[in-house]
Length: 355
Length: 76
Image (cartoon, rainbow over all chains, first blue to last red; front, side, top):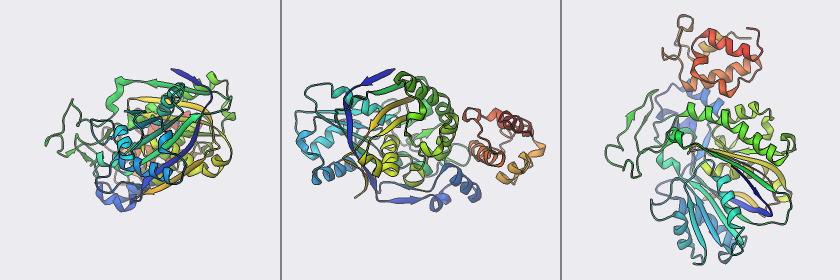
């Protein structure tokens, strides 16, 4: 499905990462796997260090921390937030929405919209689309988009397929109306028939958490996890990305009448280094124009990875001038979404540690 | 330049890949080994194996792996 927006802009993005850093090498002993093979994987996939919350930190904690920093620095005021979108798969509660919790904790005005969006790795693009649609309303002048997940609390420490790559973070982006005439194009696709390829089986009403769902099971290749944990069918997801994302981006560029050469950078979701290098090769895009270094520094942080890739690689540039970017997110749902836009100059683009 | 067998041996030295016709069914390669193998083949032959070709059928034995790298223009 194609979308087109006019006169909208992202004015800043702040990423909150837990100060607690974990090292892949130190964690290798958790996996029932020879050290030499783990070290080879480290090199290929980009496993290195990542950030995880310590203790019972929740999404709203990271979000409130970051927003308070923006208030303190006068980069944003409470009164001007007309809509608060929280894109997460790991909300504080099943009910109520985490966005309402953030609103309440920060004492934001009551005359506003709070909305949770249950999306993950494609969540930055989907959140931007929702923000742009809200800004079509006369009453909405500024939208705060929060992409946050704490998946480390849902990953088994004995599952080599998931645990070494998971990171926690919250990306807080401010979206408002812009003056630029350059349209923003987006393309979104969904395939719910493959939902089981990336799923937390227990915890919803389909399979409530119980002693049985919490029991660790051998799931092959020396890995152990329970039904309360995040499961990813790595081969299916890898092939889904390689098969579906290039045509999605090509379709987007064709709709916009843009060539790949006209794009400064392809800022994609960051599942692992190998998958992104293969994606870049398939699209004949030089690796330098598709950053792949978020996982090795912070882990795969779900919907926060695209703003993190921007802050990690282009913060100085993007604070000074606009970059022509193609964003692409892909993951749970299955969902894949891309957006073509000029981003910048941003008022702020940085990462801070929590707490 | 290393041969396919030499690269396989480096990845899983405990197995004799010359005697198996189905590395996957014989549990000699798992999905992470396939990723490591693709990375090693790419570097060794100066190619980039297409991501959509990274499926178990292409890693069953030396012949299927050789066919895969030939697809990338390698004279093997």
